[in-house]
Length: 86
Image 1 (cartoon, helix red, strand yellow):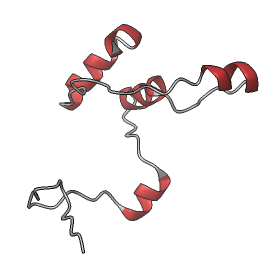
Image 2 (image 1 turned 30 degrees about the vertical axis):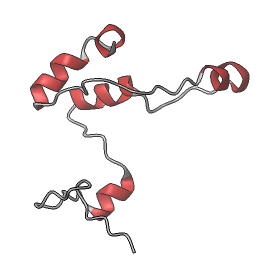
Image 3 (image 1 turned 135 degrees about the horizontal axis):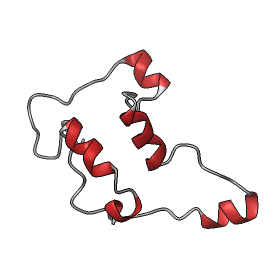
């Protein structure tokens, strides 16, 4: 499905060593906002791909300030972070 809308993504992902999700389980449709409000999203997948082609990694200003944080080295049963119920 993604390849149908943005065929160039595969070359870009391959160059970065990335893979696409096996499936996309939800899509948010913004058709009504576009039609009734005249809204045009700036940050869509095409925008991100264009940046990646030009060496611009998609990162928010807050993430730049804080820095990229990896997951714990230890993988917990409930995911990357420990979950404790009281």
